[in-house]
Length: 437
Image (cartoon, rainbow, N blue to C red; front, side, top):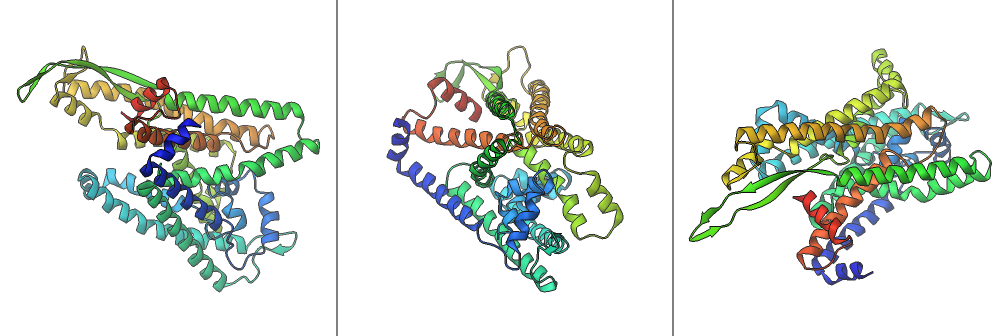
């Protein structure tokens, strides 16, 4: 309670938190605003049979908006996909690479391009999902009340506007609120589904479709997964750094010993989100494409199949390396250390230091990528192979815990800057400060 009171005493932090909560409330209200032309009863029956499919994953990331076919049915995934594409293109095209190195202004330009591509992807995905739903029926009833071209047009316009609005909400939360806005939107959607998931699980127990022992196993599994997520998200490798004595103006600055903290999972929750976003593309294309090879690829990536799991693991590990390389440049770190008289004991400053840091980072990223792949894949195997149906595991827990830790770290920074004790113990505070460093 004391920590919450401390938050209320800082006007800037209080405004940021209330602003973020207000926009998240707007998002949750929008989830319940339906897109015109859909039979909601038939749609609910259809999605009840799709819980353990790729549509269930899409519905998870949209916070239940897809199963309601609301104005936010596409969620924030088109924006994430656009960001992936431009981060990949930054490595390929010199013009984008130059913009990325220009600092804040260059990154804003790339972000503007990402917004334009988001609209294009939303139009394509909106048309695909409209065509897909128009071709579906449940118990002989069509999901669409009045199929035809007008339904597709109004669906594309509605869903594209919804995604654009969500993109704006996320950017506003990041800029004027607290935490990463895009991640918080996904976080809010997942957390909002927890009460209904708990209720559904208890109904299975009451109907004798799930034994109390299995329920206990699931609870223990969820707690173990949460523990490992917290452990790996806070784990880091500390590289010792020594700074020599140097003269600044007329003062002699004493040498000091510190360390360079490298997180095991420097990419955070981005790799699983990116991987899930890419895995939905074949299903989207197959929903309105008549090409046989497209449908064959979509069928081979059936949710829970060995090809799906293999591709998901490879994508997660790839994006772990890719995103870490984008966010952390060993050459720049080594150059800055050399500029200020810093060096790693036993390693020559400059190129040798850069190579040493890069070697350590590659090993850490491999561990982090494997950890993310295991956390996201094991629950899928339990769902599809062992017949266990549950909501609390893998990607959902990873996003919830990871986003919560990052948001707490930002709140902690505001509290520490104003000399207040934060949410965590002093030892945990030092860890979080080291993570930010």
